[in-house]
Image: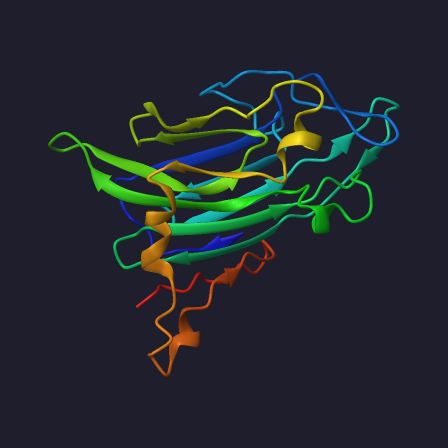
Length: 220
């Protein structure tokens, strides 16, 4: 968890990284997937990684759900997540989540769920707030992002299906990347200006313990 500067009126943004298949290949057995399609009412337990950005209360919350293999064994992993915020309320979240059942060396071969997502507050029709998203993510798994406003209405922000919905999807597709939404261009404003002698002040903030969440740096 981490604290951000609130942006009243933008509601809550929910992002889920989930596996379409019921089972996916691993070594030496199969892992259970989420066995579902995109769902604006998704249960946060039915995803591999879930991130909430609560613009009303100024919070980022990320969870990595336990992994279960087809023998019933359960293992728990912890994602590495860092974040930055800009004065306009845009938030950049960089994440890296490793399947605790993954063979040794998976981080070296690129078999982790990782990428960068930017959420940018903007305005749609007059009087209507909305978020747009973009960045670069792995070709697997599937991703869905929704925005819930204070009236309880939900709108899709970004829907991106995995390159493969089959059992071999993680093995074949995790090492690859592609741009989504507004693409890598949305990441540019967050990059450090190395001509600034105090550039390190804009380093991303590591998400931390919910009992004492850090405050995300605002890039100046």
